[in-house]
Structure formats: C-alpha cells, structure tokens
Image (tube, rainbow, N blue to C red; front, side):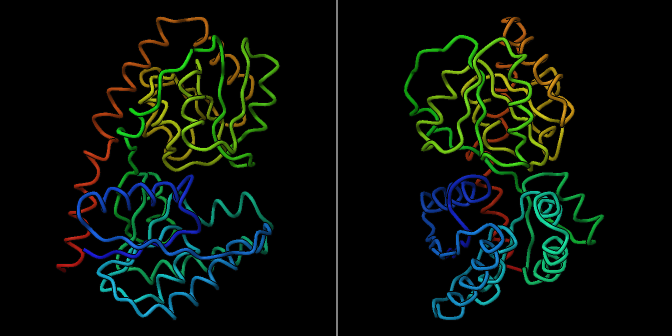
Length: 316
C-alpha cells in the first residue's frame, strides 16, 4: 500500500505515534511519505498556519495515494485536499476539550466548529483510547475505530544499561498546563527524593534518564494513551499517574501502577513516597506492568490490526 502521512510534527504525542507507525509500515514493505509542512511558531497561530500551509501543499501535490492518513484536527485540511483513494483522520483525546483547557473562549469556539466540520471529511476516524471513542460518540454521534498506539520494543531494548539513581522521580513530557507539571512542582517539597524534569531531551537521552529513575510521575490534567507510561512499563519503572483520559486503560490501580485524583499534589507526593519506601510493592507493580505492555501494547500485537484496518477500508 502507498500512504501519505500528515502531522504537525513527527515527534512526541500523536506525532511520535505517526512516526512509529510509518516506520513499522515501511518495515513491512509498504510505502509511506511524510508530509513536511511549516507553521508560524506563535501560540495561537501554530495550528491555523499549519492548516493553511498544509491545505496548499495538499492542493499542489499531484501524487495519488492508496491511503491519506492525517493525525489531529489541523492535519485534516491537508488530508481533505490530498489525492487518496481513502482518507483516515486520527485524534488522540477530544480535540475541542483540549483547546478549551488551553485557550480563550473565542479560540475554543472556533476549534469546536472546525472539529465538527473536518471530522466528516474522513472515510474513517480512529482514536487510541476507549474513552475518546466514547466521548466522541456522545458529543458528536461519530463512530471512531479504536486502534491503540504501541511502543517500539526493539528501540527500547537498544537503550544501554544505566546506573540507578536512588529515589529519583522523573517528569517526562512537555512543560505545559495540560501535563500538570505545576502540580508536581507543588508536590516536590514533600517528596522524599530528587525530582528531575525532562521536557526537551532527545528520545534516547530521555529513555536513559527514565531507566535510571525510581518512579515516573504523570500528573496530567488531560491525556489520551500516554506513550511515556508504556515506555516506563517496558523499562520496569513504576508509575504514579492522574486518573484522567485514557490513563486508567493502562494503569490498573495498585496492579500496574498507582492512580491519583488530578490536581491533588498532596496525594501525588504521598503515593510517590510509598513507592520509594516499599520496594516489594514497587517490584510487584513493575512485573505486572511489564507483562501488560508486552502482551497488549507492542507493535507486534498492534501493527496487524492497523494493516487489517487499512486493507478493509480499501476493499469497501
């Protein structure tokens, strides 16, 4: 199959998922082109400028593809104007809800109106979490295909052994409101260890830092199906995370990790300290989480689902 992938970026979050999926498809013998589109690097202009420039690139690109697969709402404009037998749009989380949390009411209203329009341009809609699938059904009466995002276990195996740093607590993600970095900063004074904030390291360096840590803290206010939790599970690092979005689909409380209420910095510090002190409980969480991610979240398990999804789409 011949694919065009469209994403505001091909790293981090849904962009990182798009990049991994592209690599997996290419390794399976398919042809994937990743559209590179510029944007204006100003907060309220990033998505609109990407949408406009992507639309222009889609119009000018005369190449024909079997599948045009766009990732996130701003990519839908390039998808709409690109030449593809079938078109797929993937959303991780509920786009308009995310914008509402981060932007003004005016921007939020525009995002909601845009979302309800562009979602109808795709032949198929996909999302990586069951909660997003259910929310879109309730909100817009739209049917999404549930296709979880996987992790590249081969790449994770290539991360070298590192020295464990006792009681190191890691934050791994963007320095942004929805990720709750401020909640962890508020909890930090009560944590019996050193908190390290990793917001912009290259992936390999970030994974080495994760592998050297005792706990991964995920204090998010909004999430879909976080890759950093799956990476921590594979690298055998216990996780304390907010009970939001798709996180409970990964973190089975007190079995594969610890769930806490969002916005609760006190509970966050208490649960982190309990894991740092209780090595037996930490080891139990690690083993359960590692088994879960290998059995359900590796590309070996997930890629065949994507290929079947694409083949069925082309044949119908």
